[in-house]
Length: 77
Image (cartoon, rainbow, N blue to C red):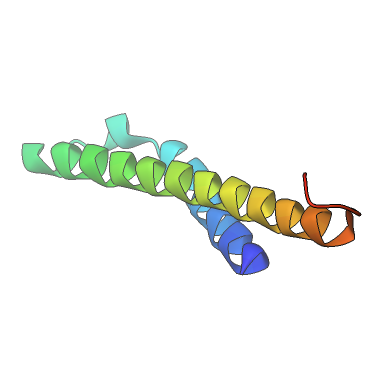
C-alpha cells in the first residue's frame, strides 16, 4: 500500500512539474476561461499531491509503530 501511494504521489508530482513548465503566456488565441481552468487544475493537482504525501507519511508511521510494538519486550512502547 505504501509503495502504491508513493508511486502515485511521484507521478502526480512529475505531472505537476511538467504542467508548471508550460509556457502559458505564449498562447494568445485561447479564451480567457482557459487560464482559470488551468489554474484550478494545477491547484487541485497540488492539493492531491500534498494529501497523498501526508497519507504516505501516516502509513509509514503506523507501519513502524506496529513493528516496534511487535519486537519490543514488555507491554509499554
